[in-house]
Image (cartoon, rainbow, N blue to C red; front, side):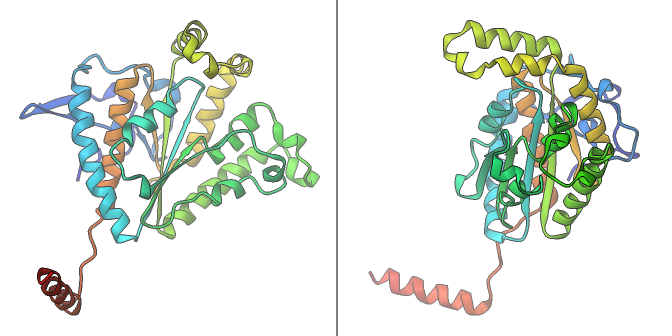
Length: 312
């Protein structure tokens, strides 16, 4: 188990060296990216680029090692059935959420993992409370649920565009402090999940505005990527500063020791994926799942079954 730095989170640029080598294996210090609410949070102090000490050639060895370990731990989590894991990905458009999920979870048994994408809510979803559609997708104990966007959209895009004012809901639910109330509700909700066996890990892919611009241009220039671009992406880019402030406030208000945020640099996708794999491996090791033990009666039953099978 990794030792956490004393005193909580510090901006990533204050931690160095970031990568150390031991017997030709690369180890990454992910604690610099972890936000638990113990210290004042400032999104601007976190880098969007990898540290200069990072060697892109290390990515393959990191991912291979972590994928194998994650696969074994996930099998134990599934077999034990005591804890569920909720992984939330939030980011600006073009930050690489889909690719990160695909690459990091490539070695995981799909039987125990479910990915859910939360897009613009449907009329039916809007007729319920904002957590309703997410609650239905929570993981069973023993399983992993990945949210590609989540209920945090209800304090991000909803805040930026004040969409709560347009809801068909009682006027008392449209007050100016609606978003602040939701921060409290979300924090309490995640504490409730923890107390009921579900661990929540929240990952924000921290992308620079310039890198987003380049990725949008790539989506336009490359025919096989045209489908990824929409006019709405460009419109939302115009609210960049508002979204950065919304993320700043949401992360600061909802980070907790039991449901932390991780601010992961997203300008270089291979590095981003390597960091995410390290985060998830660290979380799984903290959970420390194990295969269920069997009773002496079960051992006798297995021995008897083996005898019968050996006879053909």
